[in-house]
Image 1 (cartoon, rainbow, N blue to C red):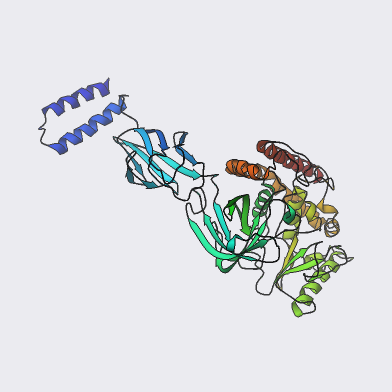
Image 2 (cartoon, rainbow, N blue to C red):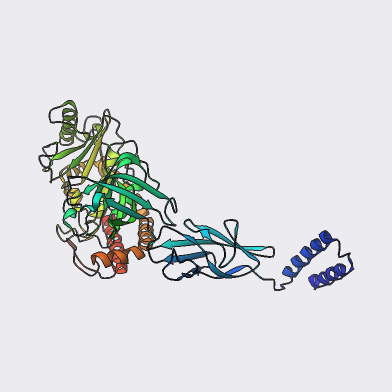
Length: 517
């Protein structure tokens, strides 16, 4: 009643003032509007009611009309279902209010053209009110697209010989640098062992000058992981997430991309770091070492053997020759560390294994691979170690998890129960030291407490890949079909993801009981 009386007074006062005094009129109108809002009087609320991009208004960019979804009254998502680099578009939209602004620039439906390559802050104004939306215009699957053109469109058939190529990475609206384009000339060859023999092949990229992709540090060496054997495409990503939250000095950085090779769609890949010594990767200085335990070592590799590891230890970086100073240094150091581990006083922190081997890295590398029940990490292959001169031997980086997390039909590693990495010679010995066992239990509790974050990471990645998975499956037909060495086939992508999460949950619970937590 009080507000109603005040409104009558204000209306009367408006009738009595000099209409030529515009400032006074506007001031009283503003006051009147405020009071009308307080009384519940219906003043138009700003709202975007529809948005789309019509092919007729965008003939050079669109094949079909693109209807946008207004989600939760705060987000607008639009999907252009074909590949396009150009998002300079004219929108058609309806709204309640006076005007619509895109990042502060006025938009007029069917008239204004705007570049939607990055997320746009869309604001609808009505009187004194404003409503903000974030507008995302995705293209194709929503992933960045890496275009690769080999010289003369020559086919990549070798894991040894590079071909000259041009690379063009176009980031999508949700990429680290939305809409950015990175171009470089470089070289490409095949990579991998069993993965190279799969229909969808992985690749190694090399550039003459350092180049940065998707916000990562510049480097000359990159890889494309195909994940052909992993129907979820998330086992490597999940392991790398564990690495990121661990005490390991470095975990490789990867981003999902779509690959277009010589004009043909090649599928969904992970673009990221090639393992090497550098400041932004394995940072062991100019005179340090990157090693790999690898059963596939051959005459092209430089390696040495140890007493308690059956497979060769390959010196991956730097390039050395058998018998030179670098070769002798790293061979002697690792052999001395192993001898200390298997000595009678190996538990002595000053004279035993801890004098030569870094506790934190051995514990976390062990746990990540035990959680994943990673067959290769049973000191078979892709088991990396690093050594900085004057420092201790460290495990890591972690690598190669496409047949981990239950995705394997041998060694009983499909079973979420049972010990895997602990039976390996070095770790079997380490578990005989109470200091190591205590550290493992404490660190496992840390990873167990992060289980909700691990599941959330899987869910976010699965949502991000929801459209790319369909395109990749259309190309390679991996869903619903056996690919080596699958233990089981769960059908839809949703089912594959749920199986992965179930397996991880069961694995954590079994390990919790194993470590007496």
